[in-house]
Length: 164
Image 1: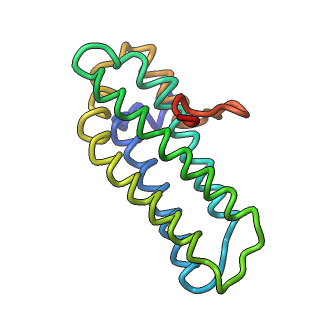
Image 2: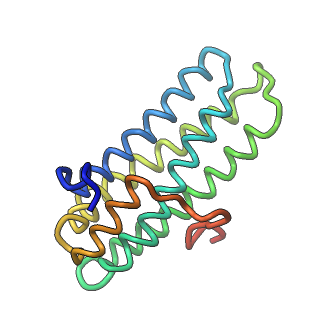
Image 3: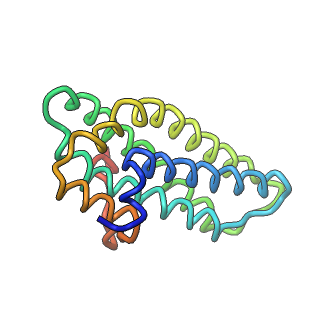
């Protein structure tokens, strides 16, 4: 297991990713409120969120999705689809030149994404993430820890429910 992760619970590292993503969206909205569209910063935040969804769906959820966690994981995957589609809508909005007088659609999409993430994280952090600390075999925990530190999402990957 990488050095940093050996001293940190996986659940704490996963929650930290939530905090970084939330802060990125918040910083983007703050600049938006000042009339500035920092498209690169938003793209970076969305890339971090997509990577986070990837690590959950590919590394965390499969080994814990049996038994008591099954329905919770199902709900998380379904939520990822709605989050993913909202990110796609944001991508479309920031791809077009922004008229400072017409920032409402971008602001509303960011607010929708923030609300989706808040609702999602209220379940994921207390229900799913403890299983990262207790429900993974040693090699699964090591793989997840390494991915959190240095992993990259494969190009073109989309979450299971992105199109639903």
